[in-house]
Length: 320
Image (cartoon, rainbow, N blue to C red; front, side, top):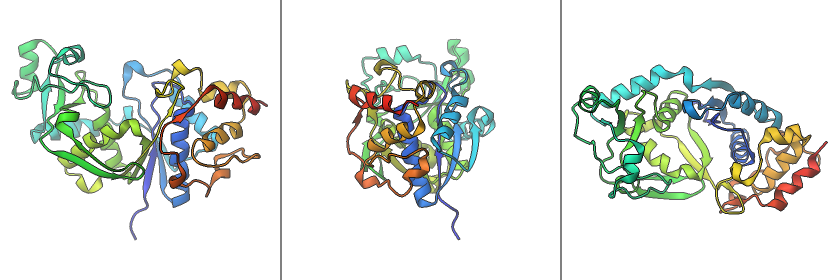
C-alpha cells in the first residue's frame, strides 16, 4: 500500500495571519481533508531580523480558532539546522553552488540585471567562477560570502494543479539564486526543499506569487538527488487590495487576531473566506469542518480576489 499523500501548512512569523493567507490555508486544509491527505504544520522561522515576537504562537492559535487542524507538528525550521547544512555541503561538494560576495544593493544597481517576475533583480553572475571556495572569497574581499546555486541553460516546466502547464527559462528569468545567506542561515528555497523532501510532502498548495519559486525548488530537488520526491504543486490566486497589490498592512488591519479581539466569530471569517473560494456561505458555520465536501477547485475564481471595503465591512456583522 502506498504511503498517504501529505501536505503542509507553513506560516511564517514575519507577520500576523491575515485574511489573505488564512484563505490559502483554508483551501489547503479543505483539499487535504476532502482527499484524505495528512497535514503537517511547519513554522518557517528562519528569517531572523523579520521575525515578529509571538507571531508564530498567534498563527497557531488563529488556525485552531478557525477549526483548521493538523496531524503533525508544529515543526520549527529553526530547530532543523543540521539537515540544511548537510544539503548545502552536498551542493558545494558536487559543484552546484559558488560563493558570492555581492550585496543586494550591488545586484540591484547592476546595469545588466533586469527584474525577475517576483520583483527581485536577476543576478548577473558577477561571482560565478571567481573564487575557489568560500574561504578564498572571504580572504580576498573581507566579506562573508553567501552561496548561490548555479542555474544552467534551459527551462523548467511543471503541471500545476490550478494554473495548468507552467514553463519558464530559469537562467534568463530568475538567474542564480541564494541557497545560504552570508551568516550561514539557509535561504527559503533551500530550507523548504529539504523540509518537504524529509517530511514526505507530496502536495504543496500555496499562493501564485510563489510560482517562480517552484522552478528554483525543482532544480534543487534534482541537484540533491531527490527528483523522485518533487511534490505536486497547486498555486492559488491571491487576495489583493483595491489597488491590485497583495493584501498587506497598507490595506488596513485584516489580521485574524484583530477580528477576534473585536468579537468577530470564526463563522463570519470562514464565510468570507468561503465566498472568496467559490463556495456559498453557511449561516450557522462555526468551524472549518462545516465546509467539508463543499470546496471544488474547478469553481475557484481564476483571477485575484479583491478585498474591497464592502467585503471587509461585512465582517462587522460577525461581531458577538
